[in-house]
Length: 574
Image (tube, rainbow, N blue to C red; front, side, top):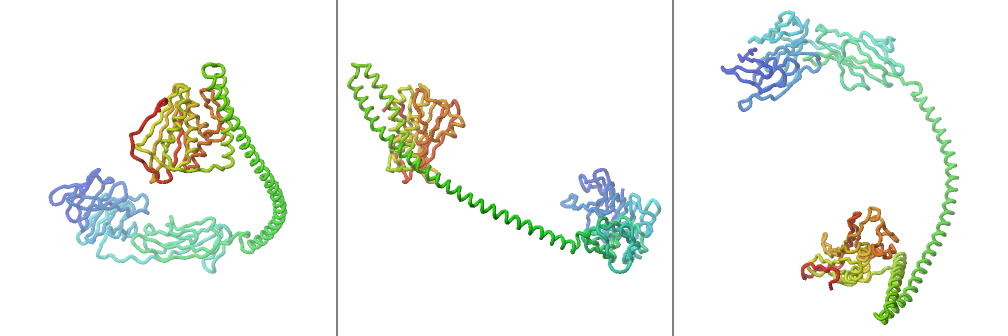
């Protein structure tokens, strides 16, 4: 239990400090950060608390009827193992602190140590006893230690004498002494420097400290442990070693400066560097000259080789271009020449079938077979013509304003008989509330849709369904029409989806009715859709059918005309 000069009594416990003032007890904090030792109230009403196990002080202030911690201060960060044993507050706002290493006076407002007293400077011992400080009304301080009781008379306080400059007792390099006076010494490369100093002061050596700073290696002052210092492997160049005395509560003393120069190794001198530079420059020049001549010869040979290869490639490219053009013309001419006779054969086969009728079933069956074979040949010839047109890139669109759903419905109607031959339900569905008009090339557009519908029927098993939907939509002010063809066939593998729209690509799925496939249908769809500024895509998983979609922008600000609700047209209906 402690009593300060105002008569307030403090009772430290394990977690807090209780204050008795005005006839009642109160806690200055629900839980303090450390184990409290004692407390003192300052003139401004704030209370400073000291702790048993840490050299820290905390400030507490009454706010709104409760005490709150408002500050934390570690006043002795440079004194290891120091502990605080006693506090005493002065009317002038100072704190006397009795510690395990001496007596100090603190200025909490300035966060400064005003004075420090060690044994030999008026106190009988360094270690204060617990709560061993007593401040009398006249300002005198009694300081109890394990070695006796000391008294500080505040009325007789005088400023401490200024600190002197440290005295150099001797310095050496690699154990060889250097002169104490004279010109700046020159030290050999990577020198080890030692120096010893004395502290010519009447003050106790325990309250004085030496601190040093070496230019080029240290920016801040470093406190020395004793009066001896050593620097190993000094870098080359000019240096200044500065040493001064330091005491708590007093400004640093004057600086003792020792100037010296560390010489570089011989190969780091200016003349050695110059010789190295001249030699290296000559060697580099010789290497560059030889390399230049070699590169010049290689460059001339490379230019001749490139010119010859370029000439050969140009001639070969011209030959290939001519051959490709000849092949395309031959392919187109041959296919066109074959198409007309084949069309005539199909026409005559149809006439023979109609004339034979039911009276001659054998002839009717053979003409039917002849028509099927001719139709396959016509499909192949049309594919060849499409291939020639794709390679020649001479497809020209003839855009006219058309009813898009009507064109798609015409394609679906044309494939109803084909779907019925495989017992497939072909369904057409318009996902709109009116007619959708836009500028398209009707022939090429219907060709693309027909290829998708025909493929869906070709690869669908019997008695399944193929669904064709038309859906307009608006994206960022642009109207698009989307046509999707969905089947219940075997679906496509990831590899199939990558290759599907390439030329002559025959995928893993096989036609389910023995139909013939040229591998051109989807590539034609892609070309026709992209010529309209649209895109194509596939959604499919193996074993779950496939959905092929095309999307075409309606270029002329197409309009939707209100009409009947969305309709569905299954196979077999008009």
